[in-house]
Image (cartoon, rainbow, N blue to C red; front, side):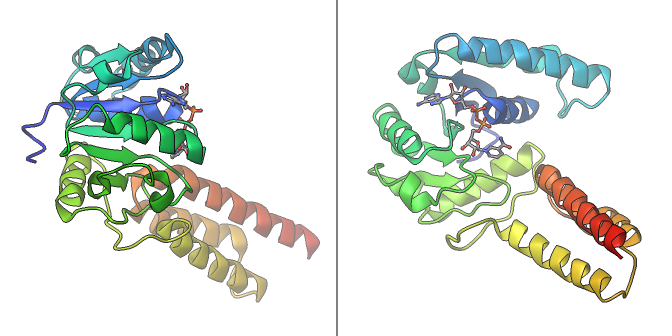
Amino acid sequence: YNVSDMKIITVIGSGLIGRSWAMLFVSGGYNVKIYDNQPGQSTKAITEIKKQLVELEEAHMLRGELSAAQQLALLSSYDDLSQALDGAFFVQECVFEQLEVKQSIFHDMERFVGKDVILSSSTSCLVPSKVFSKVQNRSRCLVSHPVNPPYYTAAAVMDTTHALMTKVGQAPVLLKKEIDGFALNRVQAAIIAESWRLVQVSVFWACGWGVVLRSQFFKALPTSSKVSHEYAFITFVFKCKKMLINI
Ligand code: NAD
């Protein structure tokens, strides 16, 4: 695939993450078809997205080259799975984080898409070998999460997904094999643990180092993981404050 020639992406599940992916893909100029198995839910999602796109535009924070109205015009909602998948080259699944639900939706999807269509999951902690266990052609499956790796995916599928994510302004990193937990969170945990140890042995003060972590280390990491970095930062400062109070 040349991702610039491809036009349609389907987002399955229109909760927080489905809406976020949809906004990201329209910012890159893609037509996005949103499907949810709760009737009317995908239509509500577009209403919600509209509010956010307008607010972002007013705040001069809208991504991409297109206006909010132009991005909104690229969105459509579906209560029917086969119609939602029609014409898509890439599908981003965003349903509940429950193994059976994900296995079942991927199994259903495969009936309606051609063999080259990329099936991508947003799973946060389920391993791909389980999520895609009911898919016949697994070489077109992968996890697209800021910190989760693809597994038995064909190289071309990873290349196309990498190009797509780059085109919509993400900073994708390819992982070579399946691993429990997120690679980025593992690295982040190591940094936090050593920082915490150095504070404990009085090498430096907690809050000053917390600011350094935030400004120098976390900013270099992918934007999409900002929330977890902020969480780690807050946890770090909270722990340090607790320790300082205990001194
Ligand atoms: P959510 O509960 O907000 O939304 C899930 C949506 O999926 C709902 O609208 C629901 O109606 C729909 N749905 C459920 N089963 C479906 C099915 N069979 N077919 C179609 N639609 C279905 O969940 P969320 O927070 O958006 O998370 C979605 C996925 O993204 C999860 O796998 C989650 O782990 C992952 N994720 C979440 C976050 C986060 O911070 N929330 C971050 C990264 C990844």
